[in-house]
Image (cartoon, rainbow, N blue to C red):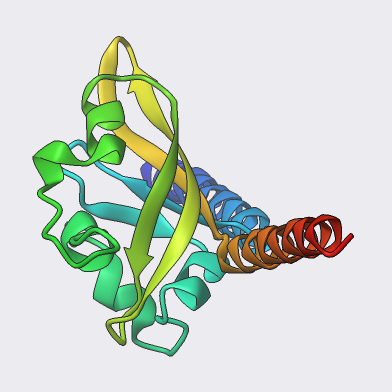
Length: 174
């Protein structure tokens, strides 16, 4: 009878530890999902290990199957496979991959990610390696769509160009 009581007690401790671990994972996912930036993690082979709601939406995977379409799969080939001009973008040349492989944090500009529907969008992107005990265990990538900022910059430049043209025309008309 004593053995049975000890077994039940040990099992209760294990169940409590598992519940705490599940609750911690849920809490971390809630934190990730509360951000406006897209965030995903990759393992040393570049496979997606987690992804937040904003990333799923930005990448066109916000439906019920979206997360499953990305988790566990090599993410470069799904979202970062071509340059903006359509040229293939081999993973070995990818600055995000190079930062992960080189165990260094890096801000990456001038890149595009590709949505599920085949359309591209410009991103501002940061990548940081996950290093444990001197070993690279993967990386975390944070990004956001900068389409609106690029559009605003282009409109501002156009307005400046028009103003400069009007000034030149005004001087020449004197």
